[in-house]
Amino acid sequence: MSEASSRQSTALPKTTRRLRPEDCIIADKKTLRQAQIGAGVGNFIEWYDIGVYGYLAVTMTSVFTEGMDETWGLLVTLFGFAISFVVRPIGGMVLGPLGDKIGRKKVMFFTIMLMALATTLIGCLPSAGTVGLWVIIPLYLLKMVQGFSTGGEYSGASTYIAEFSPDKRRAFMTSLLNSGAMLGFAAGAGTVAVTTFIAEANFGPEAMLNGGWRIPFLIALPLGIIAVSLRSRIPESPAFEITQEIPDKGNPDSIFIRHSLPKVIRMYWPQILVGLAMIAADGTASYTLTSYIPTYLETQAGVAAAHTALASVVVLVVQAVLIPLFAIVADRRGRRLVYRIATIGNIALLFPAFIIMQSGTLAALYVSLTLIMIPSSAFLALTACFMCELFPTASRYTGVGFTHNLAVSVFGGTVPLVSQALVQGTGNIYTPAMYVMFFSIVAFAATFFLKETARKPLLGSVPVVESYEEAMALCEGQDKDENLDTRTMILVAMPAESK
Image 1: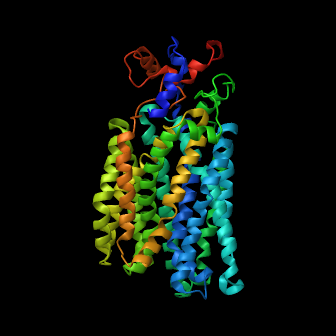
Image 2: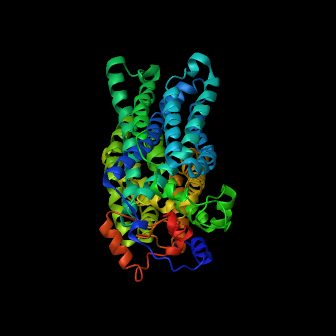
Image 3: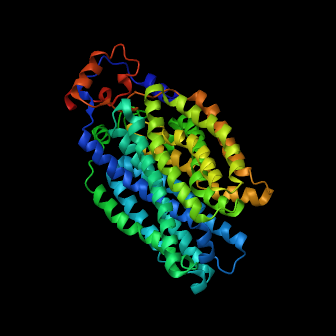
């Protein structure tokens, strides 16, 4: 438990109320599977778009900045990626509190529709050769719409799945969101590679510039329809529904009632600072691998885009498998250990990876991507559960939405733009590696301030178990179980007859 949550715990009145089996939430396997699929499709589409935009960056530079200097045109295109992250915290600040007020399900339904629509409309934009450079404006606007919706998407999906997951397997269950994200990115990169191959084989080397680039974006429409259909069937988070029974009165600092964003920041600023440090390291590593490396390899190492896309698909599929394996370790051995593996891995492996990729060979391509992927996988194994464990249920969507989106926007989404600017400004082709390593050093220092949360119930909620028998065993051993503190559970704030 973090420092602030510890203070909140001690501020709660002492109680003789004991945990009962009927207080626990029993995670129904069928419902949990339905929730995971419904939540995961949004993350898949989000990263599908990131993959498509990243691997079409050079092509889109020719399409949307025709007539502009090529070097500046690439920065303008990459700025389109960065600008979506500028509004992402706004999405988190608006949609997070809304999700704590009206429910996770309703907000997630809205974000997936908005995201799919914006991606599809990008594929409908005219080229600069047709209407002029002003077309950059609607491109940026649509990327901002994507950023706004994404601001509520990942934090909502993380919160939703964390609240459904059994406490002893929460890292594993939530890590599947990022596995799905990597598969989404791989699908985006793979779609670009297949589209490029088919278009150029049938219509010549200019086929992608002449309209082939639109196809990967337009595919977002049927994906969005499928996602909306799946999300319409998911249930609401049981932990959220319980918090709705608590009146917003009594102790104004209670962890059991919903707070405004300013109040959440005041109450949980230590968690927010630690969260920012960890997600900054996570984001710079992850977005370097997924969103900047394609451009870097093509412009600095002379690797053909098709080769990079294919290699990325392979590496990201492996990463999708590796992420939940790290999560299993986090559930069994703790969050702090896995975060230290991630940070030390980045510090040790990033520089060799960038040196190796300079050879430009296919073998070097796979080796370098793998070296970057391994520590990134350790980070991604914990992103969702770690953020959700920082904040109480009543204000979780608000806290996660603000902290995660601020860190990802400032440090993650700007990676392609900042890294390219560092290379062009300094002439040093290794500065992108140094940039990621710096944030990993900061995150390693932050691990000393982490309070272990593995196997503990979420703050402000009750234990989530997999069977009534497990609930009974948990209650029978509660006096000796250091992971249980009924003062942080919503049952102590409720009259017994209301349960």
